[in-house]
Picture 1 (cartoon, rainbow, N blue to C red):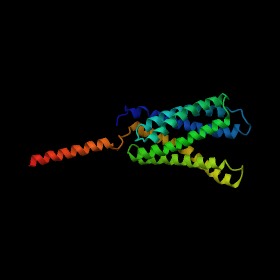
Picture 2: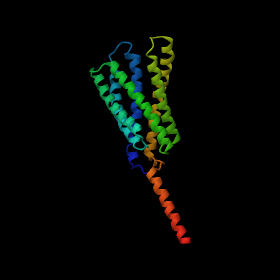
Picture 3: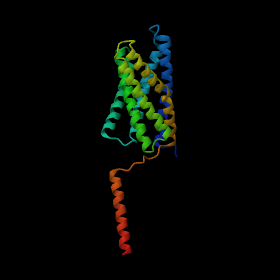
Picture 4: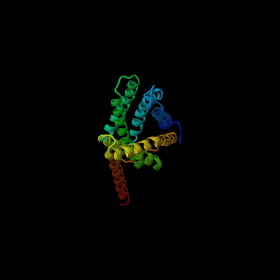
Length: 233
């Protein structure tokens, strides 16, 4: 398949996001290991915010591009618009946090909401494009499992935080939630690489037939059968 297709030309997006995701994960871990215990200076933290801002903008572009290939209901399209807008706002939030112009709690809450929306979108778009034959089974399954893991992990962690600190309910919910969401975060770059390879090779046309198309096919078939019947007569 030609590498000059629109998908092939945009394959740099997921590859770049894979690299940014890996860099961001490393910076995030280094920040917590060396900067958080001493309460700064946050050099790794600042670099992480820059990477997060760039990644959010590129993710918004990828969300719109992939969603265009899927059959969308009004609700699904609302999710796409909402997520793309939230990702752009998340990029602005990261830069404002870097400039110390926004409260850290508000920035963290915003990022968590964006991740939750991304989880829902990942589940939907991978299931949809997998069913329509656009994504191969491995790519689609890997993607919707990431989405499900994000949603479950974040919800468990969020519910756990509503309980008193170090209480049994908090530990039983927060611990597994962080473990699931963190595990998903680690393997997410693999999905980006698989997607980049797929886009570089070119994605096939979705295997779907619209109601109008199906009606036209039925009418053409009926007309052809009637013509053949008259010829026999």
